[in-house]
Length: 189
View 1 (cartoon, rainbow, N blue to C red):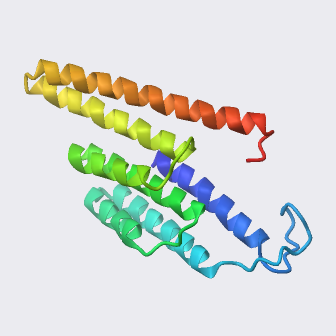
View 2: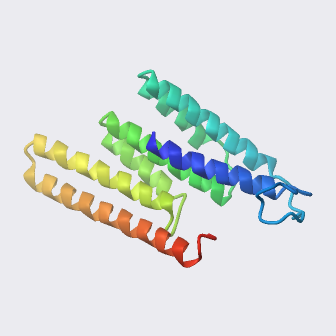
View 3: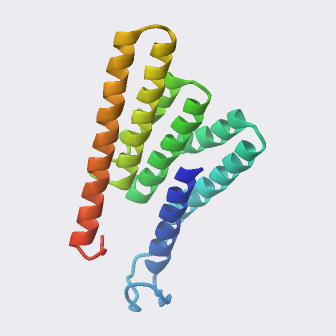
């Protein structure tokens, strides 16, 4: 559910940015009241709208105790043909993170790890979305360490715990870079 808040922010910013790029736009709140000449990309808008609807469906299914239904709704989203733009990659990365969290809650550590890897392929460099995926991957390794302890596999548990700590530290480093970059440019990025 917490990733949904990040997704909502991305969708809001993306919709606003695309609306501001509408030919002849004089929308209040847009960076310029001058028309940009760039038409609204209906494919991007359609994809983002479908993403929002599928995340809402996943919310409803999750709230009603149907995590498998929530997963199925989000799997539809990651399987959709997607425009190759940053906003879409961010939405898909965040969707993979949410899928990983849902799978982790069901004890599917390998499935959760596959989702993180799928999300990491969508975003490069220091971004909130990459940092969040690394955080989720750290949680997966933490759960793996617990499973190893329960199975009496102390060495494997120690190694998994070390990977978890390393991934969580890497997530913090990425988020610190995101914060530093945003503060350095006065929030323009």
